[in-house]
Length: 418
Image 1 (cartoon, rainbow, N blue to C red):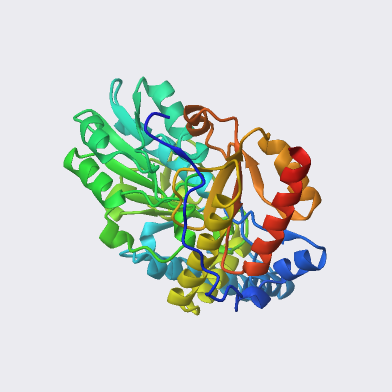
Image 2: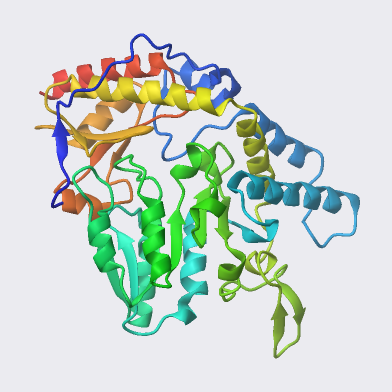
């Protein structure tokens, strides 16, 4: 990609003097079970392990009797509804949304973006523009790409600068009078950098364009005040935030949600139905057709409770220390090329003369769980001139011993491959 560098043998300050033990590791039975099998889990950007309170909440819901939400006139239904809606309130508080009515539960961040692409379609005219960035995950690219195909729109791509940030100077030019929507990631799942959202969102607002933020990676690392941020829509997935799979959250400002048309139809979202016509609920219920992932939503609530009880400063310091150690270790090894200049939680790298799939295979044989390939960001990798890379991603339960195992396995694999 023009301007974006793949850095080799950068100099990073070490963190050997900082303790790298995780005080939260024992809260995650899955990590302990994998450790007992000789596995080191470093694929957290794909999905995270679940803490004990999440497992307990799921077990309690299923063990004590399940029921559907909102419509049942009995004790199990009332109990499920109260727990389900309690999570909506927790998400509202977590994101500093104005009201629980601004929180829509989906079956993942991917579904949230598709919901938006179909729900907003009526607002576009041929020749209008949707602006995305060069680092987008497929989930925040393909729905807009396909919308552009359906409606005869122009898909405009914002380039990156040398560090891997969206180029603001270019954005000021490319976000123009025909821009109707801006869709960008908060934190890249490949380059590991926070993107300049306040500036980008200001450019979109100045043009009267709607804004969509992919928070799938960003939501995991600290709390984000969406009221202050000022985006129209924000989406993230439960399973990356230590909650269950199959649950996503779509935040929408009340006036922005009101512009959405319904995109799925069935039970729950209908207020009144006749054979020839129907009247639908407004958001959020009008966008939650059918039986929702009740247990998963309740589990997400338990994950938020768990995170709410942690010392955020301590978590951030621990993850920063681990990340610095990871970067320093990669920089110390000949031929290892780091993609961009990651600032948090992950590192993608390639090795001169070594195929990334071969390297990941040998790491896997040694019990090291990392991610390999294009990480659902093929256009970015094409612009980088790479077929893929190896990604190491960290979570609060990882510790220094995990990194020591990783580097020992990496050295053994490179010795064999070279």
